[in-house]
Image (spheres, rainbow, N blue to C red):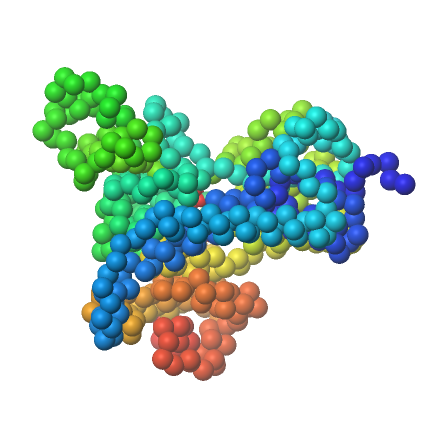
Length: 483
Ligand code: NDP
């Protein structure tokens, strides 16, 4: 008989926590419990990747009738019905949450619908008043979006709120230049919202390959997004709260104020928001979305008291086996702020089970992780950007940009970019960057080759699939430049 109630107690029912619990119970035969205070499925399923991708699909139909006309179809454009879509969206999320619960129950995991807090290295207190003990505790509590620290920031929504909006705004200001800001700028633009985006840096999607970022930014502007780089919010106020003294309340005479579209007064939260930007512009928006980063969920969990080290952003510090400085406590996923992606959290969960329950110490491999940004156009990327690779060693760059057959036929200006960053010494492909429709699907395949250490010559030996966009990735013969 074990001295503990459970072999493993998992805190957090998102992708990483559920996978670890399920595999530890189902495959390793451990006695496992899991606590989730909100909905099972976590950020990815309930308020992240899944609903976001369904919105990407919804928004992708915007130009379809126009394009279809070029291919001989006679289809009348229709209007987007947000409530109808939203109803189906939430039904799907409910279904998926049910699947997650079922998977846990099917693996023999005891689920507690409660908030959990650590009392000591082996004891968890639940908000239901129960106390349970476990040999190992795995924290997989994820993260949450954060607003900037400025007056009236509460007037802005965050990404979690989008899926529950009663109606779409006519105008929105999106603040930020990362994954979430750019994805929602494209989604909402496609759904007919007039989108303005402020990013404080010189170019959106910091850290990614510069040519890819440049093409995405240009395409977003061409598609109608009013993108301002080097720009941030200075002040924001609810228009209804401003005085009626002939000024805009922000130091600019009222005739200088440009009004960003027909702001309505019945939008969620109580009417238009007046925003002053660092470039001096004062505009009214129905809604402001802060996509200004996320913070790990480590507040009020008793971690500090136990000596579990936290980093500057509140993330749990772990070693390569996801173990904290307290040997019985491990952490995986966004709460550790390593690579904040669902499949990475799942890998970390699997590696944890392998290490702890199969006696096979397995470090998490964070190298060469392919990922996609679901902008329009989509961006798929793996490995080093040209800029990062050049810092590391001499490289050859193979790059092509062209108008793909389908949209070119329809008379659209859309461009595609394919790029390989190749080591001059080893000939290995160090980075692959694709800006194109379905780039996420393409990069999953290219990611296998890059992860296997494929050389440029391996790419060259591969016969093209014709006629496709992706064939260009194996037909670029001459380097565009060396660096
Ligand atoms: P990011 O960290 O990617 O982006 C945050 C953005 O907000 C940056 O552009 C940052 O600017 C800006 N910012 C931060 N603070 C402020 C401020 N005070 N004022 C103005 N701007 C500010 O976070 P996201 O929330 O977009 O995404 C979080 C993570 O979620 C991503 O890193 C990714 O791992 C994951 N994710 C993945 C997706 C996918 O795989 N497709 C989709 C969505 C999220 P600066 O660049 O100057 O720091």
